[in-house]
Image (tube, rainbow, N blue to C red; front, top):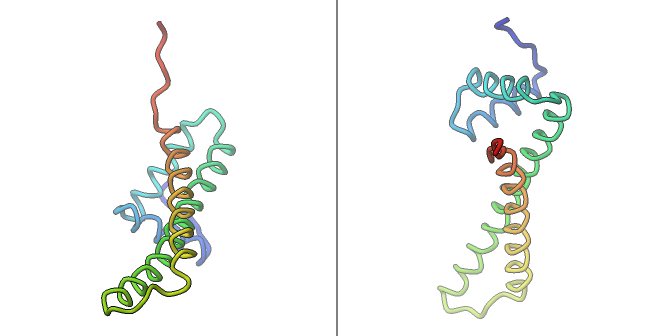
Amino acid sequence: MRGVRLSDAELAAVRAAAADNGLSVAAFLSLAAVAAAQSPLPAAYIADEHAKVRELFLARRHLGYVGNNLNQIAKALNSGARPPSHTQAVLDTVAQAIRRVDVAVDAVAQRQRPEPGPR
C-alpha cells in the first residue's frame, strides 16, 4: 500500500513533525508506521508515542515563549535598566520548562534503550 488519507489537520501535524525531524513526509510516515507495527501492542504504542511527541512539541513551544521573555529581560538589563519585576517568574518558568523537556526526553529515551539480552 502506498497511499494514506489524512484530514487537513492531520496532514499539517504530520508535515510539521516531519519537518521538525528533518524528514520528508513519506519518510516520517514510513518510520512511524514501521515502529508502530513492530511494537507488541501497536495501539498502545501509537497512543503512548503520540502523547510523548505531543508533550515535546508543547514543551518546545513553551520554551519559545519563555525564551522571548528572557530576551526582553536581557535587552532591558543590557540597556542599563533595572531587572523587570517579572524576572524571577520568568526564570522559574524556564526551570519548569526545562524539567518538562527533561521528562519528555527521558520518556522517549526509555523506549529507545535496547532491552537487555539473555544471560
